Length: 66
Image (cartoon, rainbow, N blue to C red):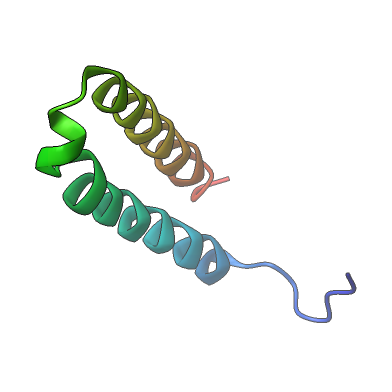
């Protein structure tokens, strides 16, 4: 992939915002759903995914000032 525009803070902001939206949607509609909560193995998997999404958000956020 060839990039003609240099990556700037707005690009990072877009990824940070997207990560926040994905985590919010996942937590609200998947992890928080009664069906997921009613099955221990699904709830555990959802918790792992939610943690991974949160970790990704933090990783992106830590790069804002770099």
